[in-house]
Picture 1 (cartoon, helix red, strand yellow):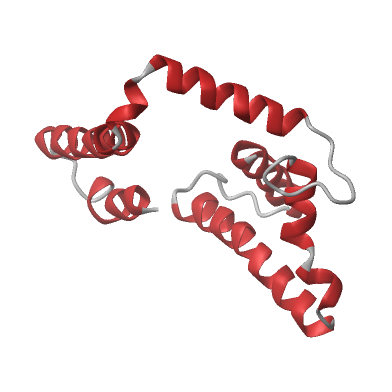
Picture 2 (cartoon, rainbow, N blue to C red):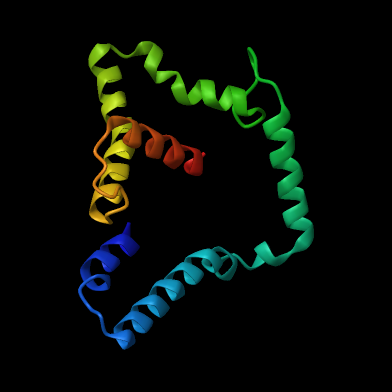
Length: 140
């Protein structure tokens, strides 16, 4: 989101090549720093055996089936049921709020499509649904 704000503020207003290079460099520096900051602030992230152990734990967690009595830290299925458990005990207004909160991703996609002129002035609802499906696929 920050990168989009920076691009919207400075990227399209200047045709100077130096400004483009500086803006591009600063964005790539930001992306690289976000990618490598977990390793810099967690030096044990460089230990190969820890990476292998974490991968094995994750693979076991994702492949385990849930069920009655299985805690959420042992199975993704139990974790998902724990995450959605609040919907069983909430009323219609709580479910409505959950839908509105989920709708924010569609609004985010709408902003990307129209403010960066990706839609090429196409306003059909199918174009929105198609791009929303792609955006959700990228986040999953």
